[in-house]
Length: 448
Image 1 (cartoon, helix red, strand yellow):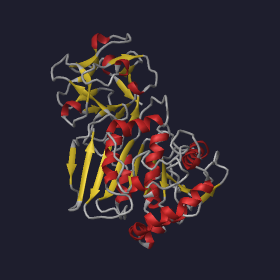
Image 2 (spheres, one colour):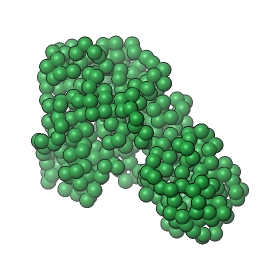
Image 3 (cartoon, rainbow, N blue to C red):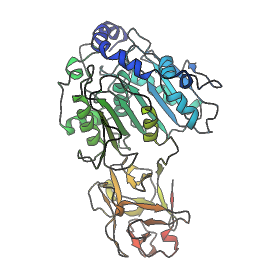
Image 4 (cartoon, rainbow, N blue to C red):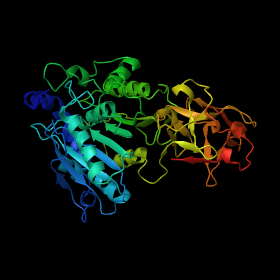
């Protein structure tokens, strides 16, 4: 959709969102102290950041305490908002000061200040419009601000949440996780008539099967085989602008994309009106986390929720994730899932390191070793020496918990036995199992 046609549609957008935007702004406004945490560093506009078909503006906040290779959080504003107001009136800059990451604030820069999540261009990898401009901002930040390309995340509210869904769908190569406050599934807002507003989606009239929603995401970047980013979802049951039905549809979509069950493995209530569910893992960095608020309208995030998004990203220092290959010291080969299988019970092996998704493991704060972006877990199939070490759906059991030890061994929490290359083999295809710990090089591993 052209920028001109986007402007023509903004009246419809504002009519639909105006009733919900006032409480949203009220909920976002913080105390003066939190809005002025960036006294040393300041918000800076970046121009000429690369391809910019959406004609967006780019603002960056880099705290003075940022490390040499800082993480990046892209924070996307709501309709009628701007990058600078989202900086001033949300907690992300204060959290950046605390934890040392960069925040990028895109600015829609058009009448109505909504991001394009509707046009065919927006829903394709490097297809054009606003998402391509945001992707350019990420690439610029990595290349010119020395940011860590392996720790890039995206979050947003309302229009920004819809865009968060789009960025994770169309640019899985750039982002590790996202947090969407009051959004809709990727592709739900799609239009072909030049309009930027999809009333059927906003009112919860569009429902699909998990496979159909997942296929929309997979179709956005044909041929992509890398890991998919994790997703954290937030929605109020009385949302008057983007119906609560969309929350359930987002859960369908992202559990399908990440290959985990729609049945939550963890459910709790952090406060009386709040239901939190996790899918695929019980830990704080589960593949999918969904937060529902009984009786709440279009007014998220409330105070403290941004910090929970940062914790989901693993940027708060509370025990985030470490991702990379697991190398066997005795052979120099990598822990590997044969044939890219995702079948439960597939026995792991060692193989020449190739950087593919079947060799990319994440050590989580809950002691799991996950693969395929958190879709599957490393699982001990028994407690005796010789028990197979296999792939399985994550379930939070001690048979899926591992201690990554300073001496190079990896031990099963359940049995205390060591991850072992059978027969001390160094050949491709050698099986990985459990064995009594003996300090041998076939029981020495390095993550990352």
